[in-house]
Amino acid sequence: MKKLEIIFSHERLPEVNDLLHKYGVGGMNFYNIRGRGSSRREPVSPGRGIERYVPEFAIKTKTEVVTSDDTANKIIKEVLNVMRTGSNRSGKIFVYDVAEAYDLKSRRTGISAL
Image (cartoon, rainbow, N blue to C red; front, side, top):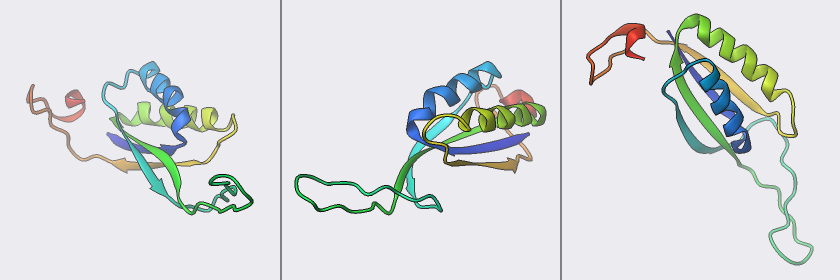
C-alpha cells in the first residue's frame, strides 16, 4: 500500500478529486496549507496607491490518499499529466509505504481496510 501526499494549487482540487474518483479511491483528506518553495511569487498591490509587496508564503492544498501500489502508480502518472497543463503548474507528490491499515468499524486489515 502507498500513501500519496499531493500538494497543488487550490483551484485544481476538482480535477484531482475527479481523478481519484476515476480510480475508485474511496477516502481522501485535504487541507489548506501555506508554505514557501522555489517558485517565484508575483508582486501584489494591497490597495490603492503605488505600494506593492511580494508575498512570502503561497496558499496550496494538500491531499492525502492511501491506495494499492499499482493504483498509486496510475494516479501519480495521471496527476503529473494533468498538472502539466494550465496556468498554475507548481506542486509536489510525496509517496510513502504503508505497512498496515485498520478499519475501526469493520475491523478489516490491510488493503481491504481501505
